[in-house]
Image (cartoon, helix red, strand yellow):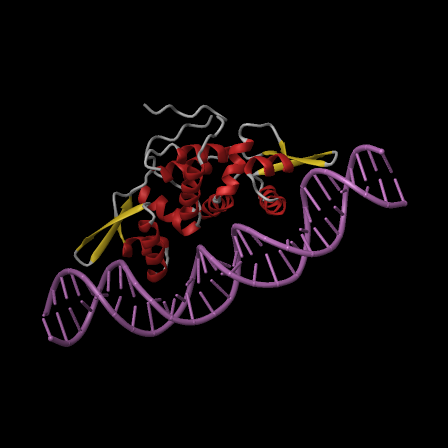
Length: 106
Length: 106
DNA sequence: CAAACTTATGAACAGTTGTTCATTTATACA
DNA sequence: TGTATAAATGAACAACTGTTCATAAGTTTG
């Protein structure tokens, strides 16, 4: 059973975990990548072309972002014919973004 | 009233908010800075020397991290005599780290 | 198989970030 | 006022990141 964190609980991470958390944060910390997460949070999966059109990001640049995020475990992909479909693998990042986005002062 | 996010809720952020979220994530995405947040989550405030000793980070480097985090609104500081005490201003980052840290696969 | 389409890759480059070191500023106290 | 202590600053530099461009690789269809 996973206990929900009490408000303002004291953190208690090992060095290793801090590095992993930093890694995930870093991987997500970019407007385009957040937009990708946001978009995929509302769709089971989308092709590169879909994402490129919806976000208005050029193919090559998007591909770099996508492959990076896949490499780091945030996304997964499968090919269907000519298309490659990406989907959210690490759904927790949605919660993280949600959490920060809920901050009234932003 | 702020509603808690439903599990796997769809994100819906404006471009501006995505940039702000990215900014916060980026500011936090570093093992030392996460360690700082962790440490301060358990103390009202700590001096630079306190933090330096507890985290084993050299004074100047720590100062760079601290002033950066303060500049970006994550920390605040007040002087008391020779010491400068830092404390957590944006407590939401604790929740963000908490959330990610709770991922079982980390 | 050639042409069209979709996505990935790699080189190149600018810009940013993390770190170290030396120096400076601010405060306390003898 | 001089010395000690605490923290900030700035220059310098290596490492990393984001972006563009040109090209390659995989797939479908004629």
